[in-house]
Image 1 (spheres, rainbow, N blue to C red):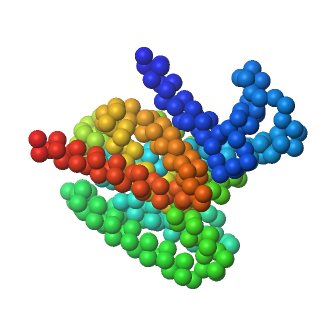
Image 2 (image 1 turned 45 degrees about the vertical axis):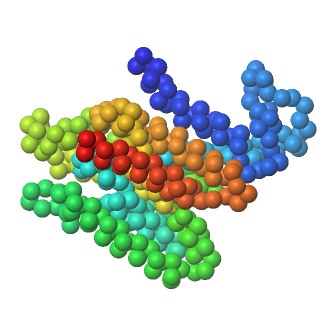
Image 3 (image 1 turned 180 degrees about the vertical axis):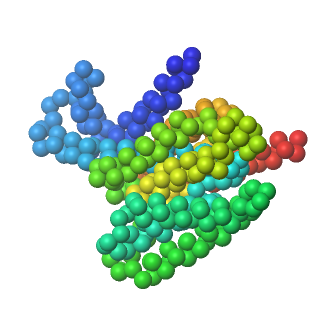
Length: 335
């Protein structure tokens, strides 16, 4: 049973990604024609003209497949980062958006897009790390980090870096400004293999690090006294979680822009399925996040004549979902 659940955990997003290859804005390429690219033992159609087969192959391998892979990476990165931060700060309302991480990474990435000398990924990572560090520093007191202070500090820092992002947009060259504005909406329509190769390694490294150390989050959730009792250094352990969580979210922001609600809603959905044990919660959250973003992106590029930015879709779908979860929690608390 455990082996079956483990296989479904990893095969689920891959299956969703595979099905997404059959849908897209290229109206001239039908799902039946996409099927022809599969091996003949799967029952693919035969008899397509060579030029037609070349077109179908180009659409699938150069347009749809990199977009699906990038959606899997970004969805897993944002959801896993959100779940790790929620466990780290012992607060279900924490997410990369709330802590200012997304705004800081967005400012760093926009600054890189507006100039020609700043590298994109390091700028996004440093911007996100700076924002989270300032938020944590403001909220930190002798007694530790208060939840209310952390959220308020995150709102302030997020607003500050959003203002800096606006300044970058105001001063940017008109041609670069259009790129920055489209990027801030959260988009995967510019996905290509170069973006996958640039975002994939840091996201995979950060995800593997967080998954290997997820049991330590259970210890940290018990409190600093209990963590020290088993030989852990709480402050150092927080840094070792904060940096990879920032790296994962910043890498996602650098290639996809601002995609909200994924890091906040998906950990709650996973928590309803498997509970609060981070040893099970983090892998399930990453799997759900990857599959969710692929589904949302497929809808954004297939349901309408003009593609709607995926960041808008996640806000439209994730917002009501989070409201339902919040109302359910309130009923449990009052009942």
